[in-house]
Image 1 (tube, one colour):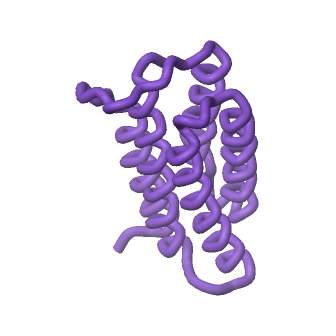
Image 2: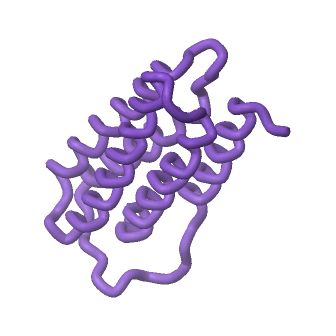
Length: 138
């Protein structure tokens, strides 16, 4: 049986692998990113990667909530620098991040388990991967 920490670590590794993989297909409408967009996109990827550094036994749920807050800040910055052509992809990340926040809040109040957070974390990683794929020039 996997421990909650190993389950979360496994999900984090899957997300990071997906977010860092390259996609050779090109989107049908690729916006020309500015340096700010590429920098903000990298910051969002780095924020997602920070989930891997959270040690549940030491950092607890607050560590995950802090990582969510960092990712939210990165998305806010990206939303400000990106063109409207990326709004659908950014909205998808925001939606999955909101679900992750809801799951973490439930966990913090004693409802559910850390394993319940894993699907939300995976969905957030997948949505960010789609956003990254939409801007191959970065």
